[in-house]
Length: 130
Image 1 (spheres, one colour):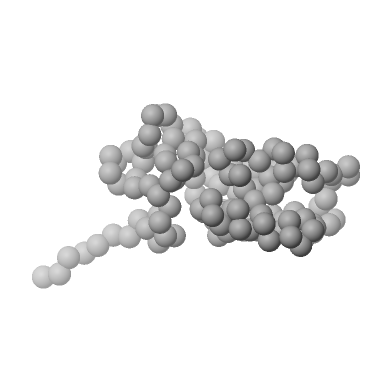
Image 2 (image 1 turned 135 degrees about the vertical axis):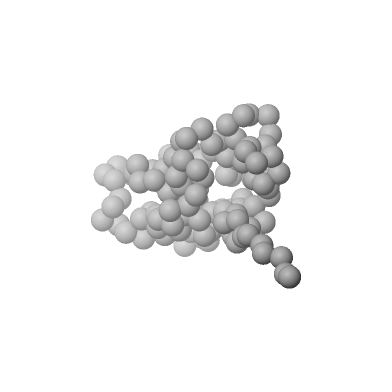
């Protein structure tokens, strides 16, 4: 008789650099509320992620839930989709490079806040996502 396998969601999105099955807790590293994603440490203390990893635009819309799962929301600023272009640091950097090469223009200009400043927004990008 054959073996029945189970595919974990993180197995389906490619090599994210962590293995949640190892300890059965989903946690690795020194911080008991984090898991390692390669060179990036994702804090998982029931927090949600609302800032775009590509451009750092943050209107409060949840992009990653408290379990670290992407909600596949499209950023109105840079047009990246949470969980697609931003799963790996290399993807974040390439998407940001392409967006900035096109002038850092807003995909949905009607959502652009009054007094928006590209340099100020980019300065808020956490070191882990640069």
